[in-house]
Length: 277
Image (cartoon, rainbow, N blue to C red; front, side, top):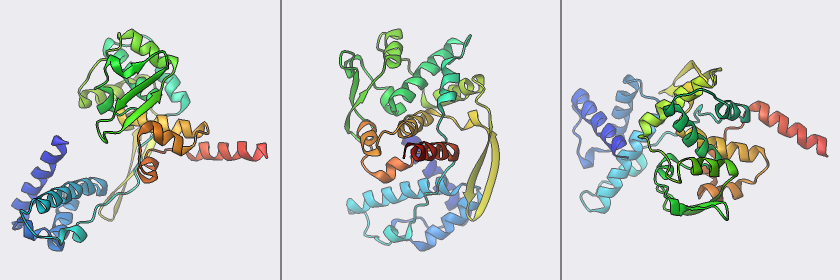
């Protein structure tokens, strides 16, 4: 969160230097929005990244407005947050097996694999994974109970024997990485597991559509594990409402961002359903 605020602040400084825009509370309006969009487009910032910047500016404006620091209400309707579909992926069962079956890997990648698979098996965010303590685990009932960092919701996650094996390996105190080093190690792990299928990615910068083909391992991060957990449960027939209870999602809209069912999976599931009729 701190990093994203610093990034937004730095962009506003650069924007101000380039456009000489009079950045005051009462000048955050339609003129600011159009000028800031032009700046972001020239900097080749994707629409979703622009959306995150605008969201932070909007949050700050709401906060300062509530504190009676200004009385500008124009920003509410003038600052529009983009939120386009992205090419974020989920791993298939085969790809999960490729990671599970890796042999002769370094201690760094071995710990990374354990943490990543722990996320795949539980759907936990990295922020919650790093805060887990022995008291969060109930091995007799095979559940993890915690209050999530992001939403402060209390959730209970059923766990399988694979999770308990990882916990026993580390005496119920999991290894810790910084998010950046963890995500770098995940990519190295996925590359080692030969998850390298060329994958087309599409992003938008303003009205420009940018296509790029990357090896699949470059698209994998800690958040991929959470998407994988959700997507694979859906493919196994678990109802969305039940999964949401486990993951802590409050709205269907936020939950659906994590669903990454491929066209092949969809065709196969429809075929199975048609055969059963």
